[in-house]
Amino acid sequence: MPPDIRIEHDALGDVEVPAHRLWGAQTQRSLTFFDIGRARHRWTRPVIRAMGLVKKAAALANHDLGELDSERARLIREAADEVIAGTLDDEFPLVVFQTGSGTQSNMNANEVIANRANQLAGQPLGTKRPVHPNDHVNLGQSSNDAFPAVMHIAAAEEITHRLAPAVSALRETLAAKARAFDEVVMIGRTHLQDATPIMLGQVIDGWVAQIDAGWAAVLHAREGLYELPLGGTAVGTGLNAHPEFGSRATAHLRELTSLPFRPAANLVAALSAHDAMATASAALRLLAGALMKMANDVRLYASGPRAGLGELRIPENEPGSSIMPGKVNPTQAEAMTMVAVQVHGNDHAVAFANSQGHFQLNVYKPVILHNVLASIELLADACHSFDAHCAQGLEPDRARIEAHVQQSLMLVTALTPHIGYERSAAIARTAHEQGLTLREAAVASGHVSAQDFDAWVRPDRMARPHG
Image (cartoon, rainbow, N blue to C red; front, side):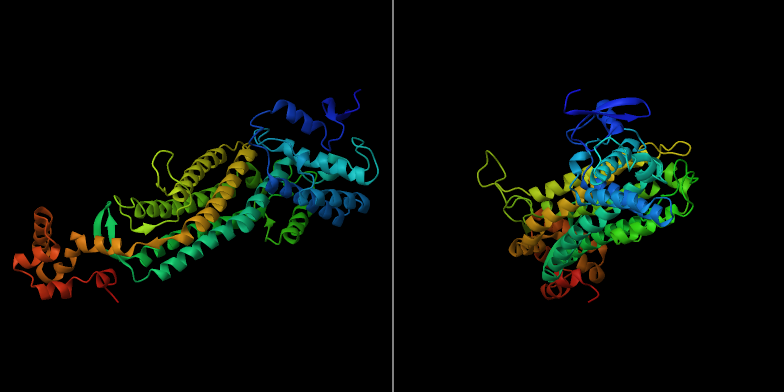
């Protein structure tokens, strides 16, 4: 046998494995039979970390319950700690598109941790002594409950530690801008047409409120991710697990992550469907929609700058054209909206996959996890980028905004309480058709004096009619 190969064994027979690798037979079989999207769809750090956390918590729980002796428990914990820390990431080569239960990835974790534990015990790779991947690392578990636990842990940690800071930073930048521009009166627009005045601060505060609502939905959805199905084993009945295993392992995960994980209320449902993940995905889509609205508004307000609205100035980060010198484009807004589109697509995949549970198992687990984590990653990165490279540099073009306010015919709305809708509409039509200012047309109508027009048509008061 070549020196760079060793033989590992599983229930189907012998398998050749690279001699230096910590994985075993089942991981190698998956590499052979599922060469699908390997360049872009391998598991990332959050998933690998969550696998290590589950296996460490399982070893701690089994030791607490007398199911695992102290030495094996110690070896598994030490090996799992290396997985959690990221030093063994190269030993997790499998792709998303594999068995729908995540069995091969669960076994990848079992094999790597067992082989590394045996190394630590001074034994050669592949011996399965003193630690066996199934009998010890996977003790009290099935892929059907261990992998869903990984799904929830990875998603909850990423929302907490990656997405939350990025959304919060962007939100605070926009809130500060809303306060800074609270007295800038601009023309409102509905149906893409001129409407009554509004403060720029009110506009930006509207973006903040939408982001807050989207984020509140994400936080609410995260509560469902705190339920873990450990202890359900194959079909939710808990076969081959100590009756206290699930609660003990979940308690250890609370300590390891500082997140409030708790046992799932119904273990059968937790394996049969992934409603909590689908709810989280839908909340991420809602947040993406709020961010898309904000980004679209920014690029429209910044359009031109001379032949468009040109009411907001955006940072000039890079040249916008390979042919038109001096052109600057709203690229951060474009990137944000593309992310929002992708998140919507990811959510469609998650929703459809979650609808496909049959009997006691949903076998679309990996693709659900992959898409939820992709949405979290994209939204976090996009929020950080938009904040740093666009939102912080947003400034109003006050002269342009004022000119648009003064040119707007919809200031006529302030006359309606005094002279009625019909007369006001006639004034607006006359101004538009004859190219007059609204003030000129109002005075010419004979229904409004110049003094009354100046007293009644106050854009700042129109934007804040109640003080």
